[in-house]
Amino acid sequence: MSITVRAVDLNDENHAAELLRLLDGYARDPMGGGSPLAAFTHANLISRLKTLNNFHAGLAWDEASHRAVGLINCIVGFSTFAAAPLLNVHDVVVESESRGKGVGAALMAYAEKLGRELKCCKMTLEVLSENHVAQRAYVRAGYHPYVLDPAAGHATLMVKPL
Image: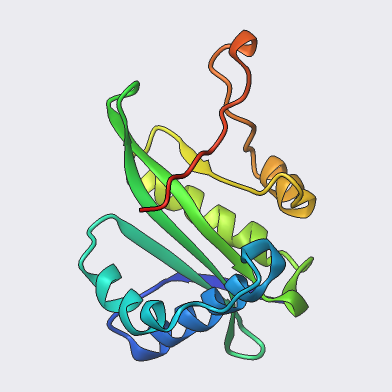
């Protein structure tokens, strides 16, 4: 499989549709929550993303079939400890039939190149504790659990819905 990752152009209707299609597929997967995206999200995500200057995404295209088979959504944040930007990998999506074919690695390489171009000090992501396949892929890409001091333990992602 020959994969090319290209930046998402939210003003391109095909790119926007592919982003929504792939993200909805991820949401429906047990590792994405097991439910489709809400109607509100479908109706508003693209227009809201267009208002952000810190959103970056890439679509992985299978060159043989000319179709998108993967997506990576990234958000630029800021590290107060380093006084520099950081790149958070927010979503990584690979269609089930394209898994194990290098799509995820291509998406992660795209994000790392983007992070370097944006002069980010680090990259972050979250992964479910039972998603061992993704964890192995992220370790291969150079990621590791966040620890400042081993005596304090690993960082834990916590959320509070509003």
